[in-house]
Length: 154
Image (cartoon, rainbow, N blue to C red; front, side, top):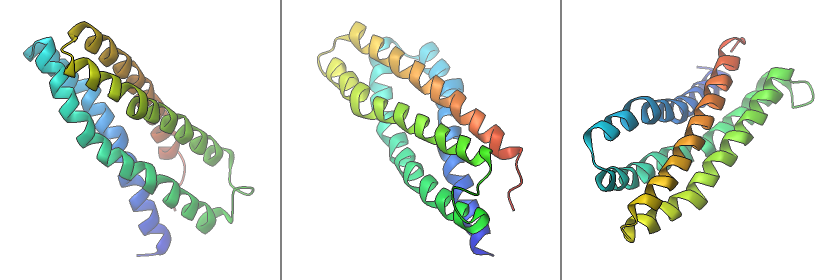
């Protein structure tokens, strides 16, 4: 296996974990939780889900730029000679990272406080904001994957 192939495989796996996890949460887990659980239990479920998922997102957040920059140098000899789609992918990563950090650093603590205070309406409102940001991030991630899938990998 070449260094590029290994780097590319790690890059794709990290993207798969992040984007696939958001797809699962948005399209499968959320609707199931809404239909099966009352609001307090649903909010408590999400407080258990987010830290477990965010552990893996943090791994992806670290692996993606390391492998991305490695591929950039292995394939294009640097940022200046990289094609436009690489620049777009890097910009989308930064936007996705910003949305993730907003959820992790600002909204998740707010959700924890609401649940601890048993303020279910406030918790539901925070969870709604998280859901919208995750939905936006999912769309960006799917766009990014679409761009990557239409470009040559090797």
